[in-house]
Length: 69
Image 1: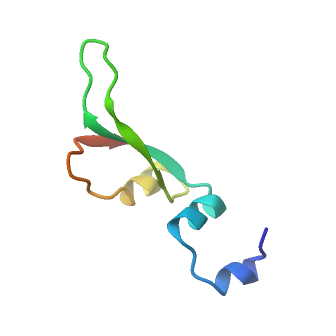
Image 2: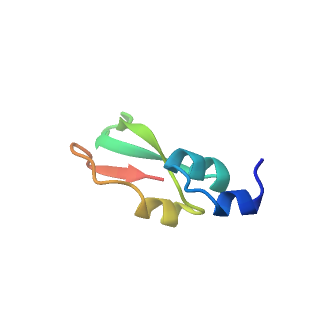
């Protein structure tokens, strides 16, 4: 693990920030399920210390109808 001084001296990629801060996995919904069927979509990794903070980092994606963090 790097020290805080090491982190301050470099720029981190989003993947590295997720590893450091913990990050969140958010589910991007491409189709809402109905009558007990599951939603369709895929998972993405997003930086953030809470679900509300992570929601701010979810990009607007074509074909997405919603997301859950």
